[in-house]
Length: 332
Image (cartoon, rainbow, N blue to C red; front, top):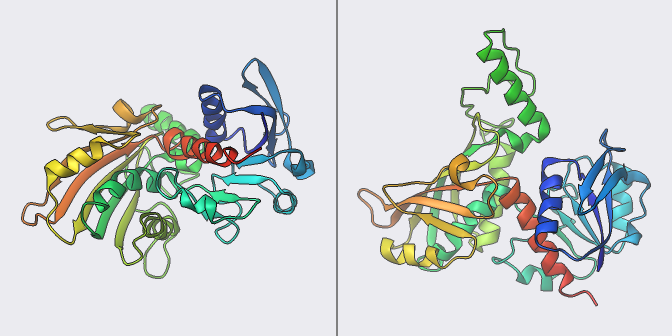
């Protein structure tokens, strides 16, 4: 049995992590729920127990073998104590930064673990990268991938509980014909689409769009891959939707591509004329769904497809649990 701590257990990702650990019978010994925010003192169920959330800043991380960081509220004192401890870490939110961690997507770059000396500190890719790489990796083994153009419709849950509450509040105000005052977002998000999800840099690219491009080239092992992405804020609570145009160096046989995707664990193809949706298919599921698989109108080297995935459960929590399962295989 493994003693585990979860920082940010009351966040959406933290609760999904707890749920999946129970479902997958993760071998938890002592479980410590931690936070550095106003969730301290709350209780969460795990199995037959209710566990109280305690302050991360005063916790001795040497008491556990494995730490999951599921919330962004890791204060400086807790971060310093965690980095000084000898426990392994699965960072779901990038709290430790890129320099202190290695990006791991189980089933794609598992060799990353062998390259790390204990303590091993892993960083989960953003859920968008998890969904897209799950689909693209088998296709990139058929033909060399040259360029990607991706439009990502992001749910408000990427902002955590505050994003979910804000969309619910805006929707209620509009449906009741009350004046709307945007709070978390810079304008109305309910019944609307916002063309950017964070502050753009001098070239007009958001931080999430840049991080996405870097993760894709790293996970796919294609440093020369050209990535163009637009992150759109959609009025959806949970579930990401991606419209993808992939350009290969030679024509890609769609029948062969379909066969390659059909063999991927954790991936389900929805064939035409049907197509998957985030709400109707992906929500609450451990699968990435892909549909509308088709060649370009005038270029057989171009492949277009549609991908949906549950960003909290599949993209964040399941990836973290799978990473933890890989880590504990090496424990005595």
